[in-house]
Length: 296
Image (cartoon, rainbow, N blue to C red; front, side, top):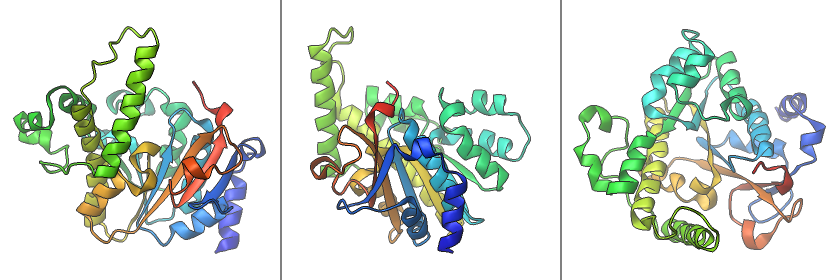
């Protein structure tokens, strides 16, 4: 089995890209992609956390997904929203062309360069793909009007969301989110941004973030409830899952006992070294990527 895994990873390798990452375990011990793929088979859900503008992370996601995937694997993506699931399914079944997947599925603008390979591999291997994220219009509603505003939605609209009321974020996750938001607010104030620095309502932004996390985790939990024999590989922004917080916490509420692996891919000025202060515990595996490779 290990020899097969090594062969699969070797076939997808790009030497130029391979020079731009280094794999570590949670505490900073050197590891490998082969170790991730091998150990992933002992988990129900593998979270691949990325910085969305990092091309090295997208390269790694493709290699890891192709290495992990077998006939019982499901791909799950933050990049598609739950109400577009029929569109994603129609594309996988060959009923609609890619242009309609992108238009009706509201694909991200970087879909073709960064996520297309994942979908195409799933389609080739006839694997399911979850459009996991809560619709952005409802995230926006919470950020403007608060979580209670979701109660005004129709039953059809609520069917695209996790059960209401969804859980509050943990204290650790909330503290991390508020710290990041305050830093962003300060940066906006220090710059000559046309957006007033104090415009964002942080409690409502946190409530929207919690819906984001709960929505993805509920999509995964529902899928595993219907098909408990499957393994899910989920791709999301690393903030949602690093340190086993956020989406991971919500998933464990919806599906107690679920076995979770977190892989965090982090561009770093310390590349290729592991900076314990900023990286320790960010994932079961932390892949340090070359910071200069990330797009602005």
